Image (cartoon, rainbow, N blue to C red; front, top):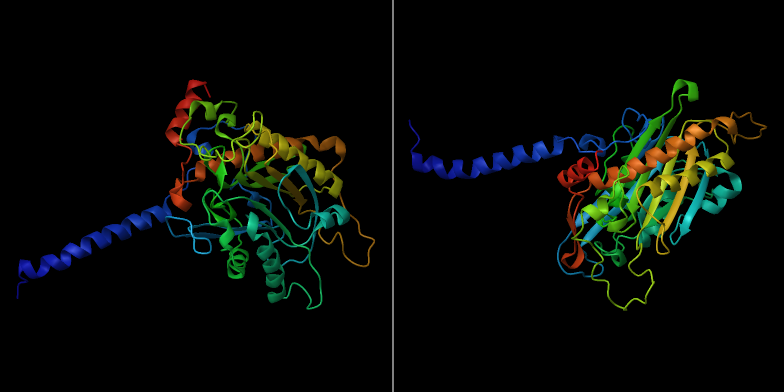
Length: 401
């Protein structure tokens, strides 16, 4: 029995678009993310396998991304453009602390737990990054997650490290949309390997140099003669203004003007010389290494992240919270009781290559955050454009880069 064309066509008419959408969706999900090196951006140094903080053995990264709603801001409802990112120095099951040091280039921001890092030289558990008004819930949720997974005793104490940048240009930041389940999901999803960049995790709603910013990462591998150590960096980039942006020594921000967020910040009228239109965001930088370093040396490493940031044009303005932490996965059981414990360390005379690797990886991680980001529209229809890949390549070519 033959099927009449009229009885077949309606069914076929609905099937074909559905199949097409499925194919396009599958292609989008499997499409390889574009990174700065893919566009020909010339960076110094040799990256690791993933060119990510996870190139440091044992380090895992997880995230939860919250994107929902459109249109006018309704506090408590949305639109929502936020999330949380976590970095676990020894993976999700370890309670072994790592040596760490932190540094504040400009303190208009928050990174909890750092007074104990400074005092003890140790970091226990993950480093988490979120938006400015979700620090508290993320901190408490990290403790709850550790209790759930029996990484803490029922009467134990914890001082988690949680940092923030402000995503209120695109996100309903006063709606407190990050919840305990989101933090648990980020921690439970932590893994090694490639790290999602751009509009993801805590970086979902961030703006960097007037383009869409967010999460970025990169790594460097030292030569055998330098120790063969690995340095990995992860950033949550929400800093800078468009004219400041420099990529590979090229004034990209000045070459690609227009469509800049914050352009309508006119109330109150700024006084001459004020920084109302200076940096209105922040950047958090996490540096990991497998080089055996002591806490005071790791503070020196954290300071060098400042130079990588400066390479991209930042002046670390008054309104920017630029806070960095560095840790070493070497020297396991360094704090084991009852001690004394034997530890190894790189001599100060051989630490400069690690400084260089930190600067290089930080610079690239910031650029990767912008290259990996996509256009985003948030509260009240505010749109932040992504760094256009084709125009970036043309500008680099113009300057023979």
